[in-house]
Length: 513
Image 1: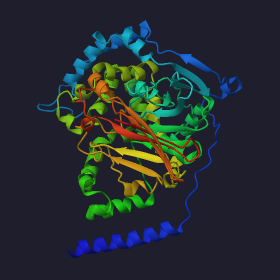
Image 2 (image 1 turned 120 degrees about the vertical axis):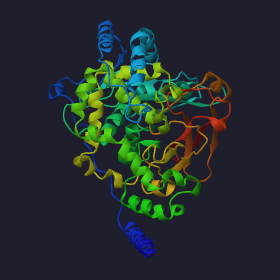
Image 3 (image 1 turned 60 degrees about the vertical axis):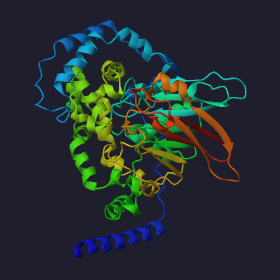
């Protein structure tokens, strides 16, 4: 009892000291980055081409033949232990079924056509060819087109957004605005070049994405991202606050000095940090640390020796499938790791999962994609102290029912507000029926029945006086095909807010389900 009192007193004194320090210290200013820093081969500096070129995803016959040969020659794997699902990693018995489908039932020509359904482009920025999807809606006079940048993470790709793009770009009869959507492959991912020298971390990717939007004619725009995309758009909002009209993150990493103290205080008095109904998602901390120890091994490998594991994954489609799809199981619903098939087809189709694999396989980008972990955890990146700079752009964040320990973090308002000054935080709990954590694999494929009965509703209003103007854009998470009931209470979606500053149009744009 005495020890507990001492701990409480110590934490209380520490909290008071922190509050005093926080009030008296001057806020940090964001660093100034070189907006033209060169990441490609030096010899290309003399032949820069800023044109925007059409691009097509191409599954070449010789590539398909080689892939099928490799799948056919796969060695016999060690069988799983008795009674084990995905607890030890990808179940080798189920892997055989996935690879058999990939080799014999995946329709390469049809899936290539599907992946090319949206306009793809490349353009040369800071020494790298950057691939992106751009969907410009056709509108009549009086309809406003709003630019929106969507960024994926690892082990995802632009494939994550295919099902949500029509919901954002198609004009609805009684609405006066629509989104122009730009969906790039992060540098080193998919069909975007990777850097040829060390140092390309999320802040530098943010510069490249900002330059891409400028090249497309958008000096001000909205941003949304998940996983690495979420960290990148947060960095963009920090570095370019006058250009980012609104910022949504479904992965609100907050690493300011106060966070650990608040988290520890909450472990004794949870009500001081998080609402009671969400407390079990954040505490006890042992649950969080247990999950991190068990599920973060990949992170340590990729942050230290990405090229070593990259050799195996680049050479073996079986290895690539096991390594990536295991994350789609555990990061979707953690309890699915106890199932022999990892519950993969409960939320996804095999075609959807293999589409994503094909983007990594055809581009040989798995190694360069994993290098981002090494770059963003480097001492050079940490020395930028971006985590301690307040984000002044109007921000919204969503925390999902299956976040918390499963997603590695729950960021309640008290913690998020340390970094995000103008914050609108959405918490969803026990209404998502085991939906995927919002941090990974964003933008779900909704069932035809659900889309028919639950069209996105758009409303416009105007805030009085000089109140900040918020907008909410409904993005639906994951790629899975849920047969949802026609009810908003069971929709597997989350609200992603974008925003407008006073004087930038003044409309309150809200897309709700």
